[in-house]
Length: 275
Image 1: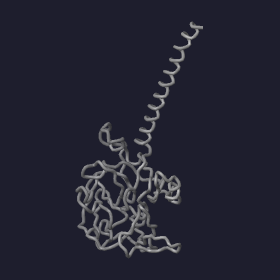
Image 2 (image 1 turned 180 degrees about the vertical axis):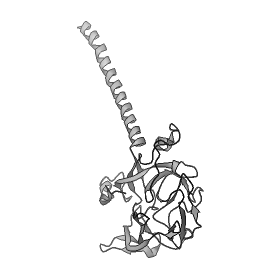
Image 3 (image 1 turned 60 degrees about the vertical axis):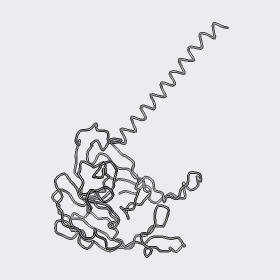
Image 4 (image 1 turned 30 degrees about the vertical axis):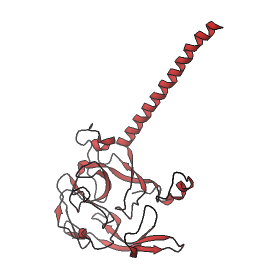
């Protein structure tokens, strides 16, 4: 009996060690797959502000496609400098919604719309976008209405509205803007602000002029690249990816200790929306 016990014990220990090694190997493979997926295919990104209203809401979670503009160190987690320059580089198109590292520090992900490419002259006059000396067509459409929530509050009292069901919402003036070539998207114009009138600027080679769709509440290329003030004209080398699809959205009303709010706070109608 004693001999049997002493011969089986080492076998049990070997099997336990093999299981531990297999589990560690599984975790390493899983981590490698996640890194590859996030670096070269899709990466998650959340919308932390309302600068891209009306298309994107504070609390949207989207996937950014990593391959459309090529790969650089900014494609990798923590911007690890393993890629020199930019591989398979491709220039974005006007109207693309892009994620990029924001100047001047190039350490924070921002999301804006591409308005100007190298050689383009950009100006804003009276809130009207002027591209290469021509006013970009802008048409007034139905107001944009968004419910008030922990993630959304009205900028000014006169934008507050009560809906038929008694809930509160924000109602904003909305316009359809159409770029040369026919690319259209909706923008908000809420008031008269300093950024409604800018000096003309020509986009240098390798750069891009970016703007938020919420024109009066976006720190973008209309402002100099100073922390907390703007981003200036952005190098295309700073591109991280192209916004592609909304995978989840929340109005901010969820609480960890109240699981039912995880469902009531979700904006289910937004999930799966293309950008």
